[in-house]
Length: 469
Image (tube, rainbow, N blue to C red):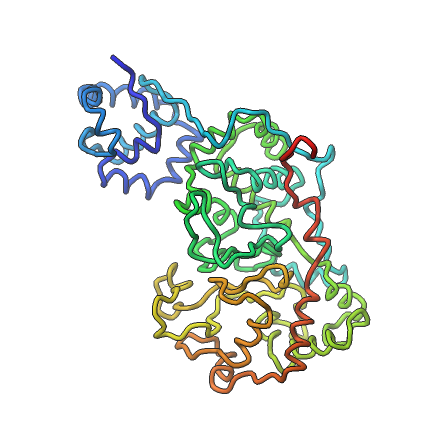
């Protein structure tokens, strides 16, 4: 009998809807089964083969049901049987021949990495020494995933590898460019098949010090470890399947040694992929701007900085004074016991009045995740670090310049039931910042750029992309 050739994705498509739903809700559990198959899997599969042999054999006479994705060829099976059959088909521990995976966009060539003999130091935080204690309460690094040099090195390679997408065209770095502060200079990103992504690509700066650990505009990921895996399997962003990716990485000669260095053995799992990527992203700390140098010299952001122009110092006065920017973006800047002058990021999601409650087709924001009406229109905010480089701004990239953002707060904050209380007066009366201090505020915000971070080789593409590199 001609062997049935079937891969995991084809198998899922031809399953009855009930079984497909079961697999989708248990995909991470299935991934763990693929990483660590039960010892009795062959026995279970043999039993299933014995009871289902005649149904499977019928597939030979019904090839169209595979080609067209119909579900009539395989009768409904129980959720546990479905999972073990999926395990058998995907892991190759079955009596059917498995079609080798081919990716036309990933030719079988020897890929090369450009890594230092001694790994870079990924644990260092170059914030002013006298102010580093301000960061400790904000650090979201979990106890089971500290940043290691080898772990972050592996994460760096994964971050830049297009193999993480289903067709080999898109990497994490495709939408998070180092020169753009690990954001992207587009209103919204484009996925692996050219389809638009719903929201703007957030900057990956100082995420280690976002205390709650919640990620994405709508905060749907509870930690960085969870966040880094979601785009890989998102059907628009990268469209891959983690168990399939794990097998691809295991067959790639680049990866077993990197996993060995990072974790002590060559085993590749989704958990280790997540940990390595999270280590690399957490290591992206930026504290080398002119603002940081001025703060180190004075010890207080409310004092004039000797390395600033008069205009930049005037803009800093607006940020900490009349414009009220610091009340949101440095929420503990005036705490006499433990001030925070470094992170420039809201620690909770907020509604900043860019849309009114009755505006059509508005993004629900955090309410997408929680379902709560009180979260409607609230979003996690990006850091103001490297603000000049991370344009366009807001979740939909509607503002293309810093001036446009300031003008929004100056005159265009819209009323909303969930509007941040600090902005209620802005909605009623406007900030009404005069032209000179408004331009000065924009000049100050540009002092948050960290040119060294934007060109730091620790965070650069490690792949040799051309013979001349």
